[in-house]
Length: 600
Image (cartoon, one colour):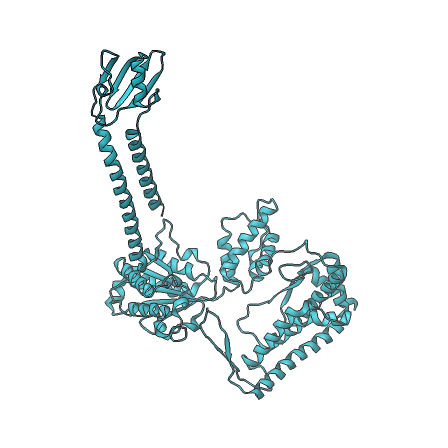
């Protein structure tokens, strides 16, 4: 783009220079004398007012006796003698015409001609450039990453099993003959599947860095354009480049953008997206065994991919990248804090413990936010408080200390959050309380931060029911203290209702309906949204589901009310402490709770 602009600027400046030079050469040179008709000079000559005449071509310059000078032009085919001016009347100085007149004539005709030719030349060049752009419209826009410092597996924290799985791909790219000697074929396509932010793209770059081969990366959305056939053309060009640069890796990010199941979108078989997908399927299955090209794709929606993409011969190896566990979270935090000054007492393992459910990208953001907070506090190092504050900023948003509630609303918020905290502390299957605050943060007027004591891969019915009781704690506390409820519990009620419905319809945790699932999500691909849910049960079963959901929530409400009545002393003590301090950390909360329980 810059090169094209510089060329246009050069041509423009060149044209301006030619125009200025041409005008300067053909522009009539002015004289200091006054321009008058030739008849005036004849009168002055006859009146003996002219001292000397100077004739240059058709220009006559008269030097008057009073010191003035006038200039006139002779008429065509006329001489001074025709006007009655002879040398005996006045001194006549005739200047011989040089070749400037010839050059003037040449420039008068040549310069405009050259300018017109140059103008059309520029137009033709621009038109040719447009045609070249149109011809290259179907070319691949894949970017080749070959940096001076390639990314390797050491730059990817955690993900032990995925890295082991992909090490075979690296070995094949380095020593393909070892596999071919035994007749083994490496999978032609490797699909990286995992939630957003888990490091799928980074892991693909690490494979290329380990193998030291070219890495062509392209987003799936870049294939599809508004013009028919462009996507398929770009696919052909991409794979052609890959074959010329083999061994190499072709990485297609967000594969579900074009890899969705065919026949479910608008346009039928003539849909541009489906044509692009068809071309990918053909290209992947058309590789020879000696073409050392590995196609890697990344998606967080493997359920919507076309089955033809996942069959053997295409993306036949699937590498699952899950959210990091506590150990892996610690490794990610250590990796991203290597170049950041931390206080000696910073406990990254503690941060890893309270960030359950965070992705690798979230953890990177936590470390970055902590550095920003340290700069804001005019500190040169990052301490534990900065990291803990960064965790809450990433998960819930910044604090809104300037947004103040009335005294009544503050008190109601304190009892609401105290209700959550007391129930969470009193139920063995509930998550542990990490922090309570009535300072608004994000969209919440206050919040209770909880965290499971251990890493959970399977959630039990007791855990669900305990969390439902905790969710109902704010609603029940408001009713218990003020004998009325507010809109502050709307988010809790929404979450509780969804958990209860999932227990009934997805997890088979209803005694009445038994171990069955109800409902199927129908994926209609229109603007990328899921817009319908298919009901595979009758109206009678729907009524049973509603009754089961109501029963679960009603039971959670009753349990919450019973427990808060039993621990009302702790509820009041925690609420008063919140009104006084606004924020309680875990040790402070546990101390107040135990003292209230012993006194109650």
